Image 1: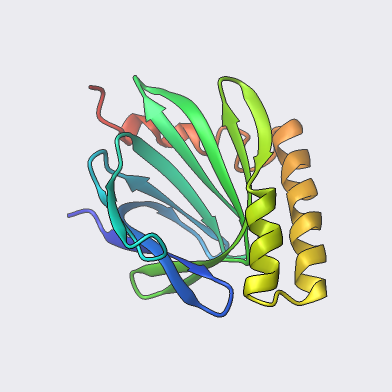
Image 2: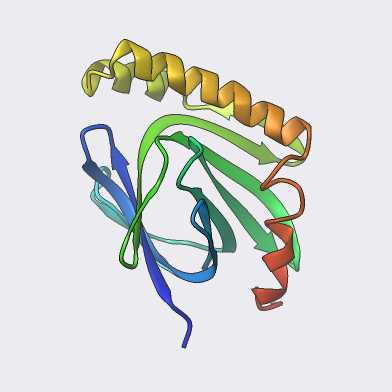
Length: 169
């Protein structure tokens, strides 16, 4: 039986944002890789909606670094990446939680881009982000860009090695 892991995204101040269930792929003291099943339900508390996810994903959550990675898997290949800038994830039993800091770095159609800068600016006010947290989030975004540019972990094939666990449809 595969171990189920619940992922909880929070807003600053530990306000529930959204959550979904995954299956454990790999766990170390520093990070966890999980598999998101096609058709899973994402409970979005902020939007008060439930979304059905249309692709399989391999997801990475770090207990040290300030980002997450979700790779959409279609036809045995990574179709796109979605990375959140966030405070390091925490593991409590079978639940991984992280505080989402709005800034996202995504790859779609081969192009990497920063999205949700406007959301970051408005939430910095709404949730009263401390100045040092704003600065840290921007530094972490630059660090993530460097990781991607230089194919550093987990962009070094570490995500892709789990693709074999995704059913081919």
